[in-house]
Length: 421
Length: 166
Ligand code: SF4
Image (tube, rainbow over all chains, first blue to last red; front, top):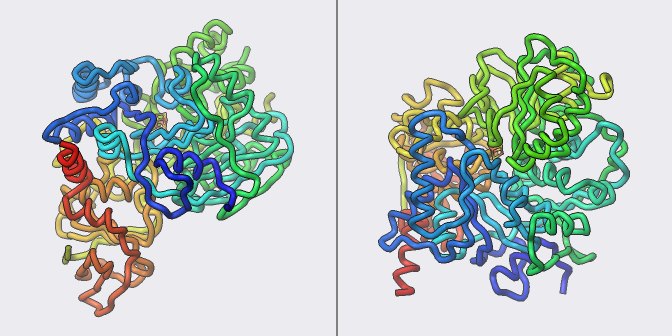
């Protein structure tokens, strides 16, 4: 029998078959469902149109209020209220309310994500959980409703792409630069419908935080998910998150088949920036040094974990953000916020002139605070720079690592962090 | 299932922020969303879209977020079918799940002009350009997706399944 990838093994197990092939349609048992305050209300609406609304496994649903939090207008507040009352009506205990953090940080941190699971989330960046060796896919609200009602969902078994990264990242070159590099090579639809597996010594050397940044952006190349083999660091993270031992570590067979393979040396990378309007429009930060910025954002499910805050604070410490630049810092979760407080990082940010906002999505999707005016430019640690994403369609978003964002906030123009630190 | 209507064209990589900008997502009301359909691409488009029934797009249509609001907006603005060179996967799922047929058809966007009349036969996977007199073969949808579409969406399918379980 041919070798199998992690993705194929998880989908075979979840659909109760000895093995599955790329291209097969399967109906698979879903281990965990996530909805947030943008997608959740439509899921509730969908479930309630059933003649007998029900959730097969209420303990498998996690609801996170993170996008429009704290509520910015009456309609957001109504959405939050709807989700709270839905949770109590259907016996859903796992509701993380305003201020707990971004869904893709809260789920792993609270111990819901385990290796080998099949997870569907009504949010496109659900692929983040692939960093733990789970098969995690973003779906729509109606998909989530179907998965809740039946406990199962239809999925197409994806082909796999292998990204093997050798070598070691250089100073102030981060996992964000690594995934931006991959995006630049693969393009916005180069991994369409595929499961992208990241491997190699450079990936193993990353912390789990750093790995999540990579799987988070797999969807930006059209992938169904990003995935990595769990290792000792994964186990350590899970232990700290209070996860008990009932999970399986799934790894790809050595002779597994990949539709495509990309290999490169991490040591050759430099700080990169994705210029608008596409996350694949990637250039060296140094080449964009004439681009002046109005806002610098350190936040989101891509890059607002403790390691990211430490990196940015290291660069900002004892310095001031350039006059005329607004810097916004949003820890990805309440737990991270607390640790950043303990470590004095928040003090560094506020002293540098940054605004620290409550854990959540913040300006990332342009629906809440920190939106941009016409003609303004923002350098951001988030994952999307589509036209109009963060406010005016005439504003521009540049995506970069926490180090590059902090460096740029200091100089007021896009800056390779190695120039200032 | 056969659909006929006038085609509106859009380009490659039309993302979900273009189909329905983030600031409108607090609403779940289809009519409200429809009023902003494709607004991120061009503020004139929501009004213009009302005169068209079929959307013809380039590659990777609907890339970006999982917001089902994008499909709701198009559907309630009167779009009956989306034909594209290729789709981003979550948009494709959402479209089928909400009963808006999405067909992948190579060559459609370069050969169709805005305003052309198209006739689409879903079961056969045929896209006929009546104005220009050519027919293209689309990538056929697997049987159970056709069934979901024929029932009007995934929830009707779930309803059937739950009914079956008694
Ligand atoms: S932080 Fe941004 S990308 Fe992440 S879930 Fe929130 S809106 Fe989506």
